[in-house]
Image (cartoon, rainbow, N blue to C red):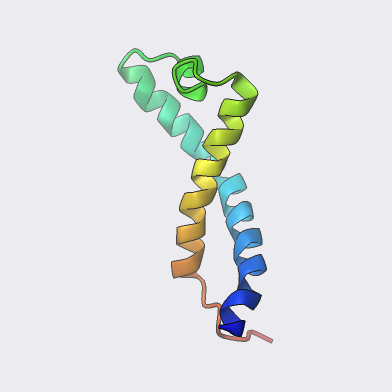
Length: 83
């Protein structure tokens, strides 16, 4: 239990780094896909006008952060010591 709790800050930092790196490429891909269906970029960012632009961008970052948290949990060897 102690090992799991001690790795949570490391997991959060790694998830934030991955989310920040993936934010722009995922956003561009989503904008292109929704653009094919005639949905405007502002509508995607603001969740159809439910949020303002800044809150929408933060909400999208949180969604990417959640996905990258799952990725970081499964992909990185947390128990192994490199040095």
